[in-house]
Image (cartoon, rainbow, N blue to C red; front, side):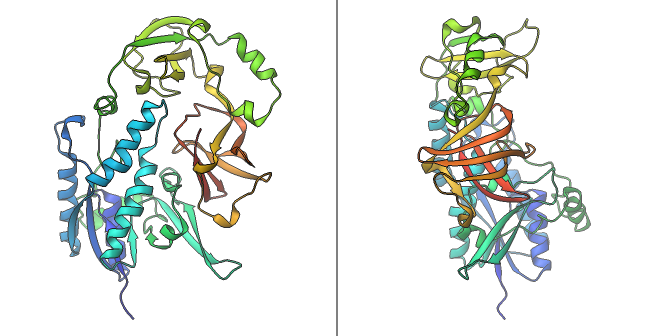
Length: 394
């Protein structure tokens, strides 16, 4: 029987290192591939050259394990599919999630195609998630994306845009392990990455100063910071509106006359709903949080304290063309509903919610109002520990 070939995305971190080790132990033919996705060192937070260090660590791990290794330069695809998209979204006043996009567009599309061209049966990554499969009613194989066993590290949210075809070609060898167990395996095997800190910042770029990064194309532009009082009269009238899904998913929009001028900023497109840092406004009883941004008028609206009513909404909407089902067999039709567990950001505890499919799009109505629902981010929905689908928040 032919040995199965697996291409591992070796990132230079401990998780992908142990992934490669476990696959080799299991008898697979393993190839290590490092993805170089960024050239511009001018926007990193330090003088280090992060991709060079990571690439070197990945190479050392491959040498230690005795597996072939090479670097592939995907910076052109990364710029076109991730960076340009990010600039476009921020310019519209939305906040994209580069990690979700990176998995959808780079790791499990461009990278997967390269791996298959190398004769791979599978690709493998160091994600903390699991998969399963069963035979469907039509005799087809249905793949399931499951949460990682380590609830603190579960990364299924970042893979919420994967398809059945992509899932059929991917392995998650460490998904059943705890992070501490992964580090222990790396230490036992004397892998250079055993004690290496987890990477931070943009997917595959590293510690990037986001404002500096965005200022490459989105120029600074002075604007006003307006504080909206927590007893703003429209909140009361808003609550009295007939509780349609449409009204619950809409965020209130403010005007300059609704509040008080408390400071200025360098560009509304640099800020996102729920943000606290970077406002540079002091002297308040409670910290200020961004409750809305208006890129047209270049105005930021803020409120005092985490409980400010402007931060909370009961529902959100996903446009029809931005609804994605991992489990197509569970897709709901117009007029149908589905009770699920949902999250609007990584590591947020799962929240009880109901999906409503309509002709205008899908609405997600939460049992408890949610703080900082942010346009451009992804909402993902689950049944127990299985991720069923996701969509871009309108």
